[in-house]
Image (cartoon, protein in one colour):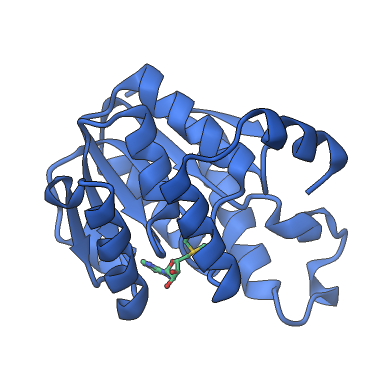
Length: 209
Ligand SMILES: C[S@@+](CC[C@H](N)C(=O)[O-])C[C@H]1O[C@@H](n2cnc3c(N)ncnc32)[C@H](O)[C@@H]1O
């Protein structure tokens, strides 16, 4: 955390359950949303009041809880390909008294979206970055008109700034997935997208047509 982030974090302590989930994520090395992005997500859901949310890559439920902070009435479908993380998410969501509002599915985003679900008011994309490009068009299709697409990690911890992705060894497919996603989301005629250097980089897109 930068000194500036620490300053703000001290002014806005996390609610106890969110602090516990974050501690668990850090202890078990499960990647979770940065707090700044969490606060932004809570504000966005409070303003937009989405009734149906799809979360692709819910991990242990940290981002799910942030969205429920903003919109406590939402129904959230949480997808994750890691079963033990989903089970942990269920325990935390139960502690929050929100288990009846979430549907936890052990399924990849691609497979779920291929089943042509009812459209969503907001989709939060936070799965493997290599999968982002192939999910972009499917997420667009699965939104209601006016619906929001929110995607995290578009800076890939700063790696998106490299001039030549061929120099990357471990993260090249993630770089390509994010670049492919950005190319689509920023130039889609039916999507108005904005990028924010918040947390690890967020995109918010609104479906216009
Ligand atoms: C960055 S973590 C999610 C963190 C979570 N959103 C949070 O902030 O608390 C990414 C998760 O996506 C899951 N995942 C990876 N690829 C996936 C895919 N194609 N569909 C659904 N889940 C996926 C991983 O198992 C992992 O738990």
